Image (tube, rainbow, N blue to C red; front, side):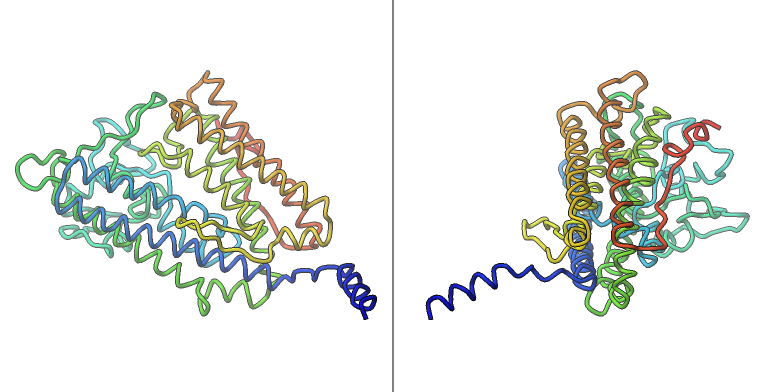
Length: 417
């Protein structure tokens, strides 16, 4: 009997582990999306509470608390950007919450002579100072600033993408104000007195500025409530990837490759470096770009490894795309995992340098060799891992995938034309 038991144990130890299925991998992906958007919503609600406190009692302390809440809200949200590109529901929605860069003069006062654009007649409209405005020859009553006015009339007004009126970056501008430091160190420095009602109000129209900030923050919460619901058990986004797991895997890979290559390495990083232009910073008013880049990169790795660490330290994890690739070709998986670690490390180096005193603005300056090396180290790591994401696509035999590109990577001369 003892020998039979030993033989049975040896036999069971020799059996290969059950390979993960596409359906299991897609479920993990959707679970991470659900958690990430839920965390984005929770931190946006904390931001909403901080904004309400700032408006009720403007002070240096309440403004700093609102800024801190905004920064905290970026951490989970940036990790959800990997759900773009492969999911039409996310793509159709994303421009309402994270569009950039923006012509901030549409919203509020800007420095004299700044921002006027021949391409955008609304670039210095200053809705906060203008109860009645004209858009495309149509008179608009803006006497009451509401989420509906921002969403339906102001955002991308005249069909111009730079007219960003809603989302994280509109709120960022209203909290920090313009960053007028160029490629020198320093973020925006909006005074809390821009929200004082009555005597002491700076910048003019403090009541309307508070109304705009309140409306934009409430709109962000509503938009995130919509997307968080889309990934719950009966949500449309979860169903879209789950009903055909093969297409779900296609969505995962498309999001990973497009964010890694065209969007992050290209449009968000190399382009700004080529132009030496701090206006190309993703979080340009707050000088938080190093964190946005880092959490984007972390989000790519999260979905490949099937694991997301929430702000409270708990972990959402399950069968992963990594395991699916490894079952087909262990070498491809090993290389991609190593390259994802390398890109996160390169982004961490950039983040650490920024937190150590070398602001991302300064890294973009012409002739800043240290900054250029840090940015290009991350760009090159992202480009390298994208080639391995393409190998994973081939390994799994997934068809119909095209990653987003960027002139800064694919046709650099076109950037200056």
